Length: 235
Image (cartoon, rainbow, N blue to C red; front, side, top):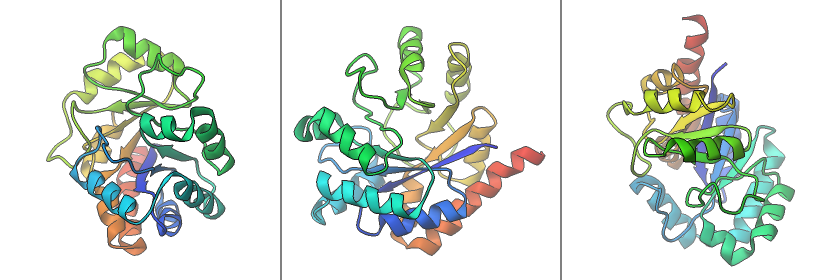
């Protein structure tokens, strides 16, 4: 079965949204802890982060949302945030509090694989990653390796990036960890095309847009992705 990872920004209604996503077929939920200068985020996720900050979603409140989400779902939950948030809160403290609140792992997109090796986290690699960096990330990653399909920020794109296939091939050559692809995957068709190359997909910007319309719309969208991925098992 191909894995489906859905990204949601931490907000007061995130636990309800996460439950709707899981019931519709999401296998893993990423929860974004907002940051004022999110280098990897495209316009949709950036605006969601701005709304979250305006709503008072600071680290302590995000941890409460994480715990409330854990009370509703039993799938892996992975907070995604930036190194500056860890600097401000304390690296060991935030990692400990996140896990106490129900986090399965962490994602810190601006933290290189060779920094803070004591912090167990999902590592990201991109088409521009050298073979040396790819091997390092693969050896250090927690559970699965996050393949960034494009060189740039998150956001919907008209078609799946052609750079994914060679990146997946390179990643397969350095380890046997699961590979999940994200950035630029926004439709069921793109999810299915990506999943033909990797073990799972991560959908962020389009999921955030659907979540803004409420749990029912998010469930409808996630369900369409689930159907597309499950079709590969019978194709």
